[in-house]
Length: 257
Image 1: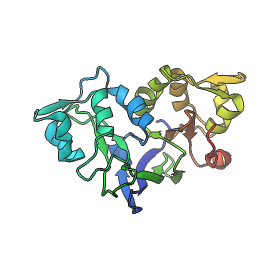
Image 2: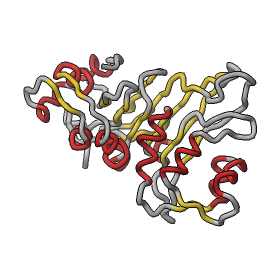
Image 3: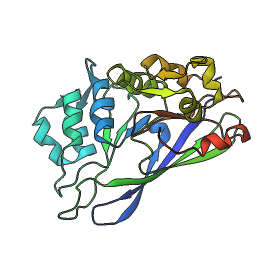
């Protein structure tokens, strides 16, 4: 069995345009990724639906997004989930004038329907119409039975991915069209010293889809796989492992390269 943590719960602290702070609690086992930026929604999540047969009953879309979604879908019984629809949903205001705070990718259900879900709440006239994430607390359970909690603060991420599909099929392809290099010291700080088993002694390393896939399967010195991959705003990645003493310093590293 792979020694990878299960993300059990995400507690997302949001600041709404009127200054109200609220928590949204998500079941980590009912999701596999969240994105909370224009790039995360339109350049990382949306392309996942290119040439994929995914449909959702329009009534279910209305249930998830609100009745205003029919401005995009019309009265069709089913709606195909396409990159264009994802982008439009990210920019779709609800009846109160608010935009989604984030989008959540859910695992495929029995019927093979696609799964996007925003969180939308009350507005404040004249303010930024999109609620902002202040921080996210991820509650995890490792195969050895040890619970762990990681807190990510605003500005540290624009996407969190914690399944094979999310890491390899959603996040990794983003680096087909984005050129980003890290120095040896930067990637060690972000991913731990074990990363040199992949990168060798190269002074600079290109982030590629293949590298992302390799990082997702990279064991730390305790034999644990990453619990999740963080997509940082400046395009680097960061891995989160088991909270062992050997990883303590790296787990507290929070500076984007």
